[in-house]
Length: 175
Image 1 (cartoon, rainbow, N blue to C red):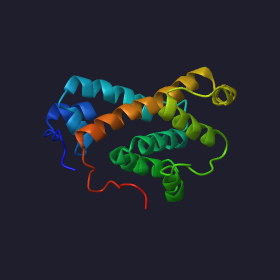
Image 2 (spheres, helix red, strand yellow; image 1 turned 30 degrees about the vertical axis):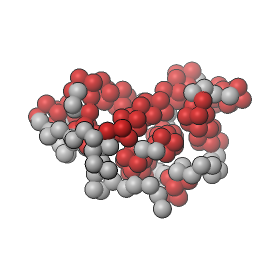
Image 3 (cartoon, rainbow, N blue to C red; image 1 turned 135 degrees about the vertical axis):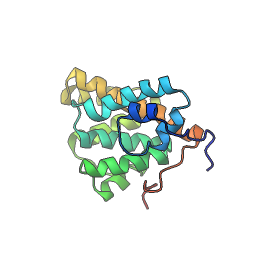
């Protein structure tokens, strides 16, 4: 797919905003059409990825990968496949998250897959899912759990609608 919004050429301000030495990813170069909104979106994204210590990184990546699959965002799925590997997800586990039934997940991980699936389908949780969530997590963590898939669903809509291309070293859907 040809991008509907071409990524902008990175400038020093973008590199400073991203605080990375590497070439900015296509998602950021496309969001940079609106620099202020890019910075605000990145602030929330950084909160979930780097400062969101309430949720275990592996659990977070399970939720993000499931959200990416539910929204059909191959870009997001590919980027988070790489991050998920660094957080301990195996290739087989990642592939299971890209199936309609998602396979079997133990304990809290299974609950988090259910949360993503229910929020993606109805934008709410069934009473039994809510009760399980309340029993497993404290309230600040529940807030993070409920906002995380929504943030990545928002990004997926942007990525899908604008046709952001994956970087050459980013995987696509599992085989």
